[in-house]
Image (cartoon, rainbow, N blue to C red; front, side):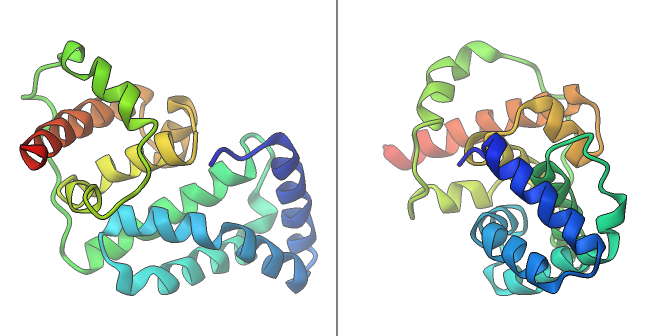
Length: 187
């Protein structure tokens, strides 16, 4: 679901109200982002049992740091950036993080042209969730932010605090792994 300009303006106004300790504004922002954050956090952590805890941590940071939001990015990018950091921390805390060495893998975009087109149209079903669970937390985050939140690579790079090429590399390896997993599953 792509956030529209109207939602961005509304969300920025809510953040401005939160700066003035407006609890109703926080509640409205919480309700607006709860489902999206829940899905995102589940994808990154692969742990449904900590969704509410991480969402609450995210919203606490929004409450505490609302004055630091500077309108240089969309409110959704800022909020998902906080969520990404909190989700990664949750993964680290549960000692389930596995970083991949990206330098040894080769780039081969030709394998993914058709897969890329089809992935944009996939709805989350029971058969894809286990495949996503086999990706690293960073790869799941890039898939979620690109295909399900509609964010461009440059915003994801800001959100994940990494170069845009790193986002592209994570996407490449995530697609490659998903293509292999989903091909094996369908046979």
